[in-house]
Length: 359
Image (cartoon, rainbow, N blue to C red; front, top):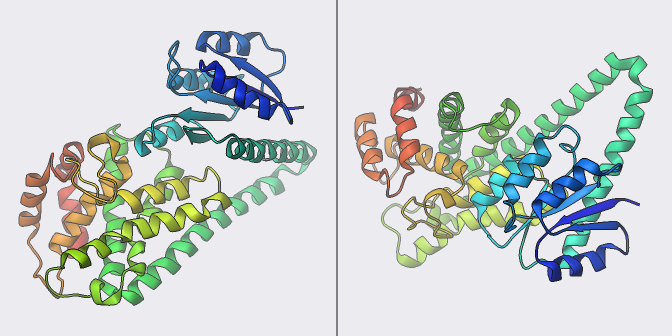
């Protein structure tokens, strides 16, 4: 029987969860961070999964998560975080630190149990694959080839999805389609600088996924009526309300089918970029009115790429601005619409942005 470790100092909540879990699993509850760490150090058999309260009073949840992921013996144990903070930025931080899942309070035990079941099944499948791997060590070159082909198939599938969606967007609105492809190029330039300077700590695989997913940031416009999308002139209040829904259309579509790919980075990153790229640093954006660092950082990056390309591009209702004019507007928007830190990054790479716009 698999063991689930619950680290939570709310004993009533922990006991309620334990009652449901004990029908299928062995459950251990620790109400303090240090006692949980002591348990890890002394236990002969480690838990299959950890359910961790992010708001522990004795020791921070992120501190415990870091300890688990930095310890050689425990680093591979999946950790599900529970939090009362329904905050995309906090959730992204959890995933970056190595969390396997993020549950927002109030916890629905039936949903939690289902998620745990899925993670345990994934563990069992992984263990089964590892056993097969051990048996195939004699054919390591064939195995490596199979793994490489599998990874290539995943990337090809992601590119296939992005290609189809971009084609559909372009057919509906050629300007949006071309704009999306240029934003992807600008995101790559921005990300390379932010990784090189330590603002972002991402491996090459995550960088590739983000750059690919950024091309879908405006895909929700497929759901916007043609007469609004192609309108020349100022929107009425009602029309602008409909236009703003493109962020929600895309996010809802991703969320509705995300259960098919649990804990998938491509899904998570693309969701944040689609939903939040029109949020503003000052909190006056949409659809959620997020402000500052509460806006997912990937959305803040897309925002400046979106603004720059829109400014320097020709549209039926506007002539293109010069690179210098676009830079001036971006500087004036620093600290209001745009993240000041990312504007500083833009200042370092703006000539590369100009090269993309001239291509």
